[in-house]
Length: 174
Image (cartoon, rainbow, N blue to C red):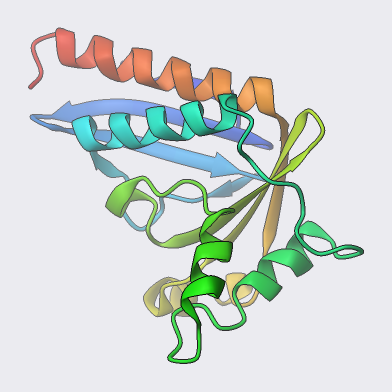
């Protein structure tokens, strides 16, 4: 049975078939299929990471756009200027990490995503990062996608996802 949570044009997660401890999880944001490189999630780890994200959002710890006058996409690019390079300082890494979202294991590690809180809305920027993906999809090269969703709806989708995963595990899956 397939379950779709949310709207693929803003943010959605589709949960499909299980293969022992793995579960098919497809994620869309801003109309873009994010899990096109790997959509089989290790359910227990994925569930835990999603629940951590929901708790972080509920806690009110999410930060607003960090740079005055910049769009979310421009802020994303600025945060990524020295990411992973030898000249990225520990302070830069820690600052950038305050905005990282959707660190949900191998299923989402093909995308760099940042979250910016804008009153009651979540602004999520996404950029594909694997060379292999960008060779197959040159239209994604350098593109920063933006998904805007109410934070309440985003958290609701995440909690619903956890319930679906829990139900799948209780149906005799590991």
